[in-house]
Length: 246
Figure 1 (cartoon, rainbow, N blue to C red):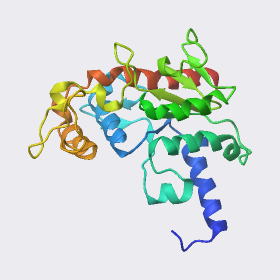
Figure 2 (figure 1 turned 45 degrees about the vertical axis):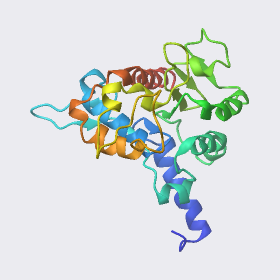
Figure 3 (figure 1 turned 90 degrees about the vertical axis):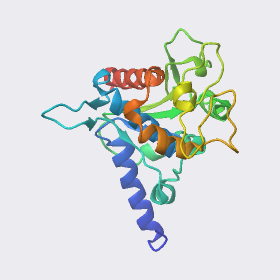
Figure 4 (figure 1 turned 180 degrees about the horizontal axis):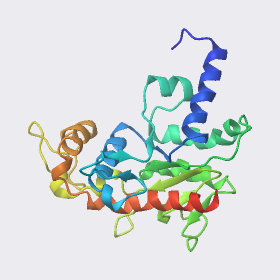
């Protein structure tokens, strides 16, 4: 990538940005990393009949079809757009959104960009960014303006939205892995499991990457994805909201 000139990089970056976030022909999903993409794609694949806005279920006469577009993190996405996964990428995207948008003299975006984030300690920095954005609105609106963690979704501005993993029944912070049941988290691969939330040890348990690839993706046909339904419901709610205001 470094063989191209700065001007070429700038032009190509603007083109990619337009395709993914402004002229996107489907709702765009921006997750924190590759594992989150695997979790959500696998969940939607299995629950497609329940979520017609997210996918068309496989039938005898037609193939399964995803109706949303996931941003895939790569060397190219990092080099050209500064997107390499993590909350840092999402924060950068939101901070620079208006600057990028001013470049395009085109009709308003027809589809939302939905940033899916863990509702954990890492979201704290993002809260301070949102507080400085006057247009950022929490839904449902019964919550106070800064009660971001309780929101079904946050309409940041224009077409970007934020969807957080739901808090636990006791109001505790969560990450996307929290939404899987213990039976799934205890499923073994090469003698290791991801482990339950209270016993998980990053040093000795299955890594997130191995859990995503060898358990969730490979064994999705036998996994209970019901715990992720509230997260998918929030994504659908954000899409529906944008459809009503665009």
